[in-house]
Amino acid sequence: MTISLLLNPGTSLTEANRVGSLAETLIAEVPEVKSVGRRTGRAELDEHAEGVHSSEIDVDLKKSERSREDIMADIRSKLAPLPATTTVGQPISHRLDHLLSGVRAQIALKIYGDDLDALRGEAAGLKEKLAKIPGLTDLQIEKQVLIPQIKVRIDYDRGRAARRVTRYFAENVGNPHRGRYRRTNCR
Image 1 (cartoon, rainbow, N blue to C red):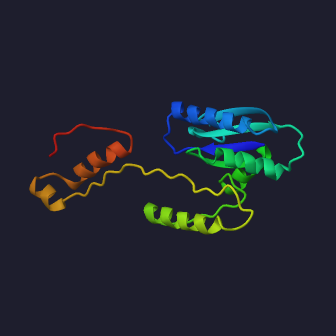
Image 2 (image 1 turned 180 degrees about the vertical axis):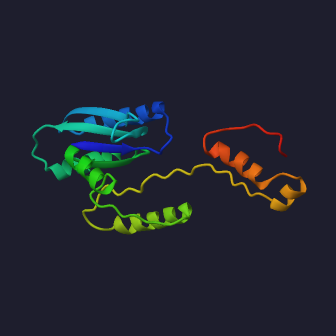
Image 3 (image 1 turned 90 degrees about the vertical axis):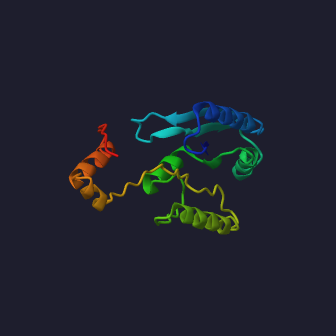
């Protein structure tokens, strides 16, 4: 079986490795577990590139009297205290889910809008409602990271008064966005 372990984006490799090692130890406590192996992150050029905040744990199981569902529930309960989102499934199903929906889940609900805080609230409310459905497991909200932004508004009247051309502002403000940087004495 494959277990997906997701920490918050931006988590350091040291922290991801610490939590991953702890997860391996907790999984190994389940009597039916024969072996545990983990991959943390994926190379940038990999077709499934992931940061170090993402780990995949492969688990081999011994034959047992307990059902597979009971073993998976045991593993989920062991991993519940970790500061990570976990999904338990099969290696092929994880890949197929990701290929079909762009999300590593059998069912994906996408909520659209401009206000990330409002979307997070809607997602949390939806997760709370869905958690009440019997048999529905591994609910997760996709991790979204706020990207720092600087908004620049040109005061055209002051620009004209200072005898600066609007094009000058547009070029000098726009260049850093396009990967070029030019130092100026504009105040």
